[in-house]
Length: 139
Image 1 (cartoon, rainbow, N blue to C red):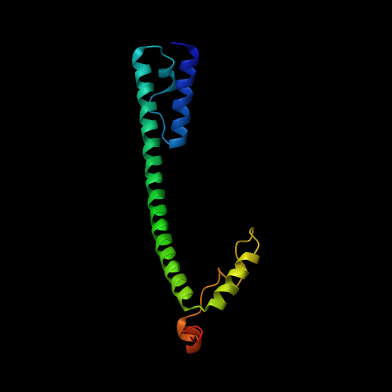
Image 2: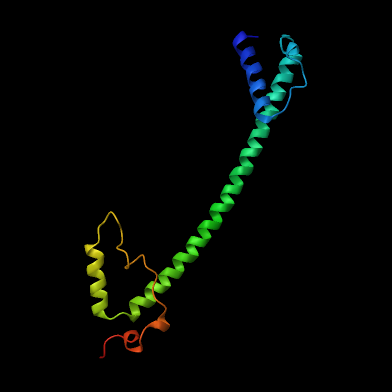
């Protein structure tokens, strides 16, 4: 066996054993043998360690995917709620209020996105508005 491959295998087994917190049950002297059985044993240990690492990574990825799916679900629900509120507020706003709002949006800085008190603020409950503001301008 090539000396470099041999050293790599010993290093791999030692590294994976230390990472996984397991002690090798086979003494290091056994690895110095160049017989086919020791090579197979090393290969098996490396494969087992790799499988263990793979299963831990897959478990962590599955957990993260579940968390992200839940966040996506919550964001979709929140987006839907905000779209409904936006539609309702547009229907209740007078044309003058809409024009004033559009002017505020156009003058806001593109780097900040919104000005405080405009798009980012949560709307006041409809119950707190006086009745004449909810119906729009008289026609």
